[in-house]
Image (cartoon, rainbow, N blue to C red; front, side, top):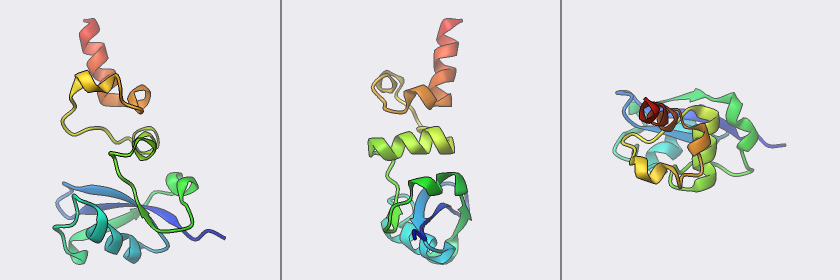
Length: 114
């Protein structure tokens, strides 16, 4: 039985976010502050974790911090969790594995039609 659950972990200022697969909220917070580049500058008590059950189906058998730079992770984060690039380089979007699901890219294409 797989006890891994998906967690949306963010800092208290809501500036940095990670998706973490862990057994508990506390483990998700710990993993995010240890292994997510954006959250490593935060202490355990400076982040909060919220469940994302819609991503549980992607959990493996081991704890895992998703990485937006990995194509498979990016596709899941954009398609199933609504993530997008913070400062998109639109010329790179056409090569992105998640372009068909990205609301930011879709909006960009709409503005170009006008």
